[in-house]
Image (tube, rainbow, N blue to C red; front, side, top):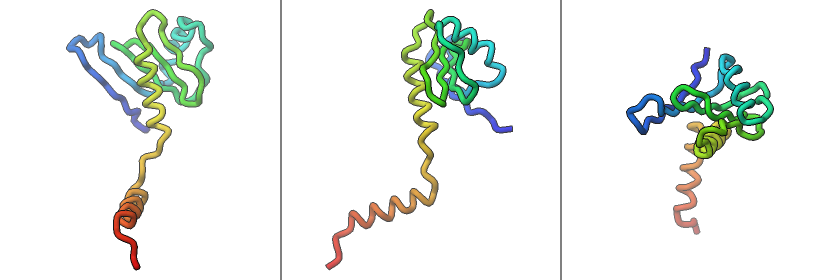
Length: 117
């Protein structure tokens, strides 16, 4: 089973304010439905979804297949939505492999060297 990466950001010693950004799990379905109802939005389509939790409570969800974010209207979530959008963009961009890095450095060295006569 593949482990789901999580990012925890703690700016306060209060654990109720801990931010967790992670991929949604099947167990999150009830919380996603509740979040959609709070936001007066349709529930997210099945598929990869990023979620942001604050203090263990699901506050924002963003489908990686497109579509608008679903957010709790009773919390300040604009910053969380921006973080999920940025994280989704990071996940879309493939990390350069060793081969790509090697060729990039060779091209850079050629461009930096004086032209041959």
